[in-house]
Amino acid sequence: MKRLITILIALCLLNTGAYAQWYLFPGARGKAAEQQPAGQQTETPRNEPGDRGQLRGSVTPPAQERQEEEEGGWQSLFGFGGDLSTVRVTLALPFAAGTQKPNANYLEMYGGALLALRDLGEEGVKVRLRVVDTASGALTRDDIEDSDVIIGPVTYAEVRDALPLCGGDKVLVSPLDPKTAELAAGAPVIQAPASWTSQIDELAEWVQEELMPEDELYVIRDASEKGFGEQARYLIDRLNNKVLRYRTVASVSDIAFQEGRTYRILIASDSDAFLTGATRAAAIEAARNRDIILYSTSRIRSTIGTNVNDLYNTRTRLTASYYIDYGSQAVKDFVLAYRALFRSEPGSFAFQGYDTMRYFAGTCADYGRRWYRRLPEYPAKGLQSDFEFKRWESSGKVNVAVRRIVYNSDLTTTLLQN
Image (tube, rainbow, N blue to C red; front, side, top):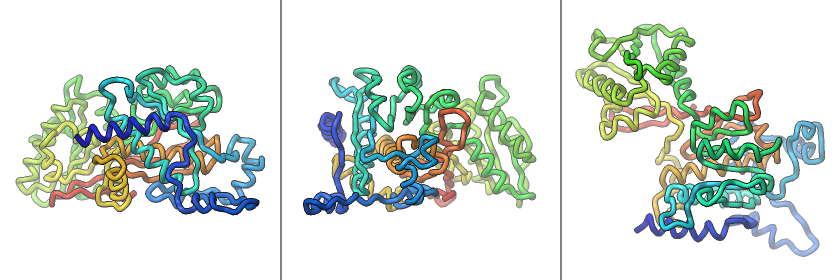
């Protein structure tokens, strides 16, 4: 029933916000500005990037620099800045709003995006939101040309088909599909979620940081042709690039455990069954008082199913593109706000909608219509995912920010702060 109420509320908001001027839930600053006496004009104060709750950028453009940009200073030669009184955002998701069974996940994502716009509005940022239901029709040239930030569409094929409409000064933010990272190398695409390659990169870095000279590092390698696939090969390559000393075995039973030694284990396999079996075997050995620490990407969470105790028993170090720390105050505030508005619990899609909208619309508000060129200067932490972009020669960019999670032996999990 609660799920149905959420869908109905989101559908009502969807129609309201399809193409309108949004100054969502203006806060005290916005209301004070509206109440100024006639003849007095004041600019609504805007918080700097570092003031935006959990989404905090490490670089804030000084006021002097912003003024030079907006007045056509030297930065404008490179397309930065520009006076944006209103940020124009297009959100393109397959809501299927006109059908008997609307997509609950994407309506939930839309709800999270609305809360992000509410928070931006309370900070003095005006946003005009255009919503496109890609289940009913593809993005048009007008949708793209009339927007400063385009979030969506979702699938690889939809993003690829929309690229010819972008011209030379528009980019598409891919909010979900990791496959679109392939397009970013040669097209104006921003991949919002970090890919599995970034997770493995971070995993190899983590192993190198924790590995002690007296420790044993083992890689359990899947010998089958199908199992030793792209991800397994990439893991081995990353370990070799780190010049780490490790031993390769076919199974946990091939490890000659000794008392007093710490065994750090990675599993190189593209097979879910192999990954699950090796994790289970490592957990059994850990129960025999073996000092075992397992390293893995977030893929293991979906393969082990209900056997999550295996991760706690092996004190697993996990790298993930998404992780929600329900103990953080920012997450608690978001959950309460979502409950109040939608009468339901927010899921992963709601958090993703919030993080994606808040980061990219906020960056545009701070840096102008060429905001995407400044992304490498603006790393930020969201509610369930983080953002960090490297400088590329190409027009696209891929998020490389990955979270580190530790499964502790006392059945708790810890999000490490990088």
